[in-house]
Amino acid sequence: MCPNRHTLLLFDLPQCARRPIGEYGSFISSTRGLMFSSHSFAPLIIRGRALLPIVQGGMGVGISAHRLAGSVAREGALGTIASIDLRHHHADLVERCRAHPDRATLESANLTALAREIQSARALSEGRGMLAVNVMKAVNAHADYVRVACETGADAIVMGAGLPLDLPDMTQGHDIALIPILSDSRGVALVLKKWMKKGRLPDAIVIEHPAHAGGHLGVTNLADMNDGRFDFARVLEELAPVFASLGLSRQDVPLIVAGGINSHDAVRGWLTAGANGVQIGTPFAVTEEGDAHPNFKRVLADATPDDIVEFVSVTGLPARAVKTPWLTRYLRNETRIRDKIGTLKNVCPTALECLSVCGLRDGIEKFGHFCIDTRLAAALRGDVANGLFFRGRETLPFGSAIRSVHDLIELLLTGVTRPPVAGRWAFSLD
Image 1 (cartoon, rainbow, N blue to C red):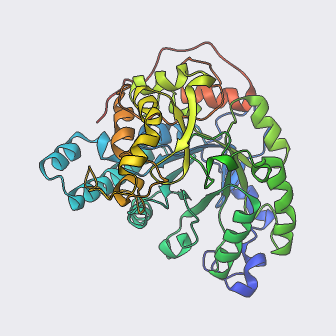
Image 2 (image 1 turned 90 degrees about the horizontal axis):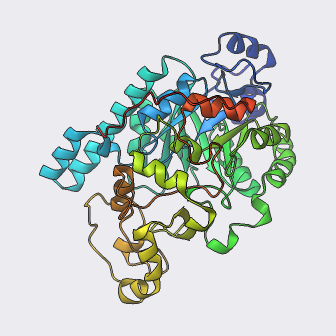
């Protein structure tokens, strides 16, 4: 028996890390949520908690904050707060940053905002489900966001936009679930092996398909998005021998597929195919409880397939968004912008220095050349003309209708669509 299941001896790890079947009864009988008794799916079990097999993806800037994440958790699922630049939801912090627009003030305000959002989400969740904080590895302050998440009582940290090989080190001594986002079996195998050397297993792994997801995508160039190595069925198949070679079972590390899942049939298909859960982003972003301005939701809900485009972000990663006026202008002039300023270094327009590598600031010609923080914040405010509106590729479960978190989860799990009820949330960006 492992003396401490969170600090494992390397030679014991496969046996110690595996949670005994006998332990499941206690946490299934004391589940914090599971509000939909009519569905037929097995629970998603993360760090001893039985959840609905639905994960709400993290969406920034400010799209998934306390209201959305707390509402999802309250239904018994896993809700996720996107950690980046949450100060925009707090009028006092925005005012502080206007008065002192330096990097230290902005960073401090964002950490304060993250702590507030976690606390508010915990209150809203009423002790049900699970609350995660999504942290982008590519963000300069990612270690600080991880620290605040641990200290403020988040249940899990989800990390993508780079290989989170040092996430166990950053969370040493904290009882918190760790969930990396990866895209293929090779990346999963690498993380498993590196983390096992540190005496830690991921508490789950999100497998995100870059051909379907919204926002930043897990490939290095646009041409790779449809590569067969990202197909969920192939990844699940290829991971079977990887798990066996490491002495692991699927109970040790649940697998959550993400990207393009927009219906009950899709949920059923992938859970039947061997996934332990599904992660969903855009459909949650447009719910009544979503934290963005109503204009943001309308842009995503009304977008047609022809309105959705892939391009290279300032991070150097491909991204997917709606062709709103600003993005249309930018893409029309992208080549000219690169020719003119592509190799020139610039001062960060916001002083935040949010990214560790930024095409605009660092003069990287093949990257995007715009201030992503400014554009995403404009989208959060509902500024259709100037914002960058990330969105997944697929149609939405309710078409262009804005429905509640409860309605969405019920549809995904049961296939039932009930008549709409008047919205329970009024928008406010504070």
